[in-house]
Image 1 (cartoon, rainbow, N blue to C red):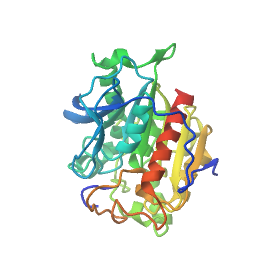
Image 2 (cartoon, helix red, strand yellow; image 1 turned 135 degrees about the vertical axis):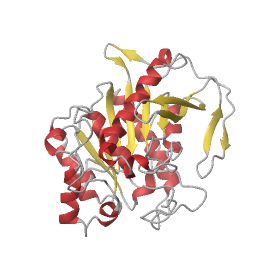
Image 3 (tube, one colour; image 1 turned 90 degrees about the vertical axis):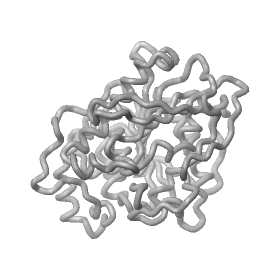
Image 4 (cartoon, rainbow, N blue to C red; image 1 turned 90 degrees about the horizontal axis):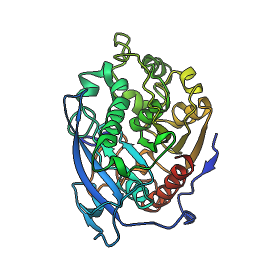
Length: 340
């Protein structure tokens, strides 16, 4: 997913959703902050959604093409149910999945969305200039954000803990879906992309048309070291990039993984990515979203934003993105309630 230019165990209906989750528990607060990133040598912008104290003045705050519906700067409650890190897709923004973050925060979670260094709407240098580090760095960036929040004086004591430690989960879309599955233990083998695109490029044309830095001459990930973060207890992957993973590493994953797939996804064609992942992972569920395209999981932007798969705000006829995101927010909250 590019901002600048650009099987089933459950079925998610695109129309006629039932509001069967627990009631919204609290007002949602919002803050921004930055944390250092050792890998990029720069500050990483973060957006934080959290349950706020009663009486917080929730309002719509325009922020470029993606607004925030929360109480900016409101005092947070004394404790949260856990920390959930949100990873955007290639060329994305920390604000692009605000509706989902709001739903999780209203259920009681601290949600932290990072702007991935070198892979965001302003800066593509990780993918274009340091491609050999791409598949290593994305999950490591999330782990460093977890480090920062768990060490932060304002937030660390608020995050629920048990005998296993702090309760941490992760949500990711597209390349962010790759990122969170890597945190669960999947190991990338980037040479698989070149093989896949030679054999199936005509059937997966948008994905294979992107520059992945995976030519025959491209080196393997920078360290080859495991990317798993044992603090992350459950992950949710939304239309994830999947073909890059080494299959045997997926079969060893024990962290719960829930996958949502847009049935009409043309950016990462499901049979090569989400469906294939569900076949490899031993502890997963695949939840289909009928009549949906790749960007169904994002807030609809307030202005046209082109991508290799059309305008980010576009949906197939009959698909109600707003209604879907409301239901998905409840489903994600239920999932993390059960697994954290």
